[in-house]
Length: 333
Image (cartoon, rainbow, N blue to C red; front, side, top):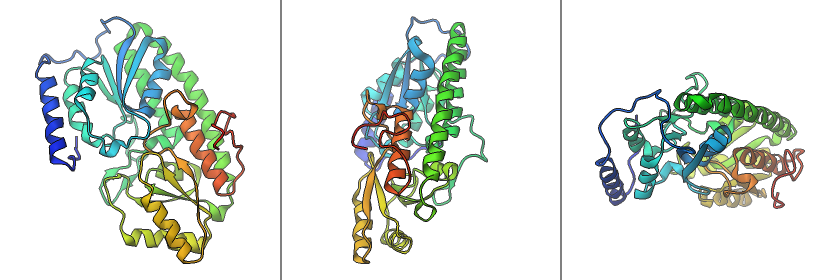
């Protein structure tokens, strides 16, 4: 696996030391993959990001308790794991992460823990031809959850992995996965209808970084991200000016900020367009690399996508109810 090193050497030292301390107490005996779960229920599952945690909760139901590491509003691209995060992974019976280098600075610890216990990337079933490639970094774009059909394959990965880990409850995991995928089909259909309702000339989504390219391909909306697929990259003046030109010439009415990314570059777009005599509004705040607060509808994967699709559609002149797909979105919409 490839690993993006932390930008701060002290943080890297602290993180490496934490890994060493925890792994030093772990037996070198290889994990017996495929063996029946021998512990007591509920199974302890560790996850890295909210989108993955939500799948596991839906599939596992009451058979597992899920502890997620990177919470709401936190950017996983540049997240620095703590000693406590390593402890969560070591205490888990089974671990799920997104993969495709989304959790760049956690990749090494996930690989090491994977020698002791089952660790699964939920994107492991995706075919190379499905994945989008970022030519500037030569990495696959990790933001697969923006395409509901693509993310539905992650549900299958979780169901299969849990079934292999805990065979007596395989039927339980299968039923839950099937029911959840049925709800995802409804979400996918809603996204297609809502985005298609935006006038074609306004079907341009401008955001802080390139987290929405799978949404673009799946639902037919052009996407312009100021930064690349990783927020570790920096946006240049040339990038800002290029997007300002698009906003002005096409009369795009709104741009969007993200909950886990700084809005300074988006504000620069608004100022640049204003200097050219074109008023651009902030169309809303989108969830890109992190979901909403735990315990809210937007803190679920379905709520996250419902929020994004509804916010985008309404701001760009499409037809979508303020309450979203099923009227569950918060009043601010």
